[in-house]
Image (cartoon, rainbow, N blue to C red; front, side):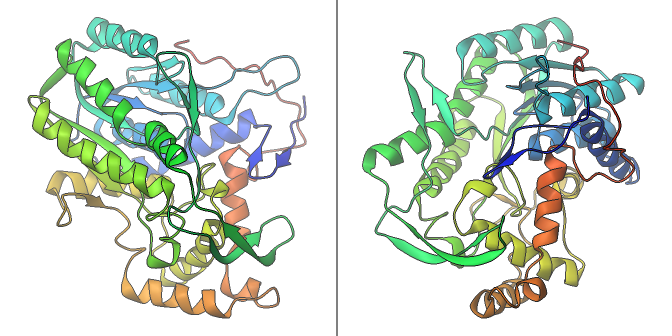
Length: 389
């Protein structure tokens, strides 16, 4: 069938198998163009099918030759309905990994569930014996708890109403948005979904089963952002979850024998998560414009290669012990330029001060569209298998 993008709000309900494959191949080619690294040999990536999780798996496999097990929660194709982008990404990753003689298997299921944790543990024990690294890169809006109840995260402030600029990406108009404060229950639910509780459950289970190698390392990904976005992000409900994630990293290091846990604070990029946060898409559009002009813009794969090739091996951390991949974003000259543009931006000068085209390009490429060299008028097979599933 011929697959076209169908965008609704901040999500695309279709994905292009050939485009997703091209996206994965492009990331692999970038990694192969860089010097090889001496990284971990056996890695579990929880949340491995899109964004930073996918790029982590690609870099660790093709830069240091790691055997990888991925955990994802993706949808295969059904009839005329395409698979999700993460499904196609994983199919392509396994294809390329296996062609290079790399071990790669994937589990498709709810990573929050005990059953998937046990399934991953069994696979590690059977195929790898132990893992040297666990990457925790879940970005789910909701979580089903052990008792069957489902809680959802909330993107709100925690003190009072907050009003600021945002962008309607569809019409490319600058508007204002008012974000209300979250209730205590909404904050607690957000922490349940996006905090560190599930990460710690994974590490504890693997440790109890003897599946973590001596001196194993685990990483979780976070974001802090500039003062401009603090009311909705760092000081908001999601910020409470990110602070819980950081405290969990300390608990894991202190309580789980032989394991060191790190938080990697990454750069603001277009993801399905960030697209949903009020104010943030306008900030990202301006940031892209500024960093591209300065020649310091990075995508997911460049960020993850810098993390595993430079930051983690040298343990370049901040005063709290976090790895700062947002260091180029947070440079004073970058943030000063972003703030100037933020204060001056209007509908009329949007094209001069923000990279909305770059934002949309990244958005569509998440779903396999607008990739160079792909014939989108061609008939494609949408039912693509993941080799290990």
